[in-house]
Image (cartoon, rainbow, N blue to C red):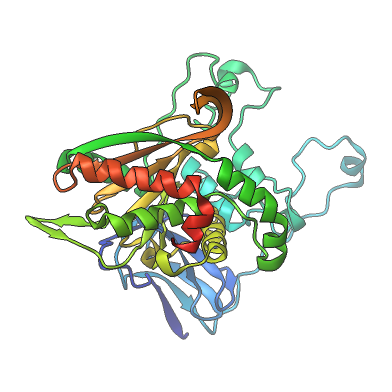
Length: 408
């Protein structure tokens, strides 16, 4: 017998421990090199643990839900072993074969295998792929199957129905005043901890302004088709907000600074965090050196962030650092909010839904596409003057996007 250990990958210095999710194999199963055996959840990302070699899973050392640290042994692979044979299934009598089927139909050979996205959703629900009938190819459990898992069957008696997942519509789960206790994921717990820390440690104040988005909208409508054809990505609005923020931060460096004890650290670079929603919660990947990125670079990177956030594939290093953040609640329809600073940063821009609103121009009431911007800042180092002027600089840049893009 030749044994190879499956170990926890090296975690970031800022991550002390992680939580095991659900094993995709059981002892005795054959595995191939680089096959994903389990996923590990830290307070920032989900990491996949591949098999280091082909063989048979000889032993699972750490069960589902275990707390682990870098380098710990999770399982052992027998690289010379053979998979245990499945017990033969007895043939049914001819009479029984003619009778109406009363027993469940056997699952496909790949039953219990879930896609990475489905695995994360099931883990959040406290479920496993075993016993879930997959609608994907060869019975694979898809994201849709995972979202539907645990729902109440219409044919089942109401009092015996299982509790619905909290994410389900309330109308499907209110009979009998049900409750469901669900432990926070490590990411959710870490987000809660950081938000409380931010409010306790920072003197947060928010200033607001309104922006006429007509210039950006007209520019985007004029070039969006050519832009997508040329760069292979859609021209959105976030890249304009990033460029406007960078222009303002260059003029008011303290808004791009951070506090370290009794010192103020002024950053000579612009690493912009972009708040992205994911099935596991809010994550903030970083646009490094955003001042050096083109509109196309920004749009491609943000699209990639969104895709990989939904799949849980963002790396820890991609969410570490940052000098300023942007949160876009407008994609969900938010009209106005007061965003919370992402420590150790000292300011964050909140972007909201653009709506046609009546405004006064040259003494006349006209309809314009208006977006309300909110800049939350740490009043310990940023005075109201700098905060207000920085937000006005963002407003001016967005209302004259050609000048902003030409940097004049």
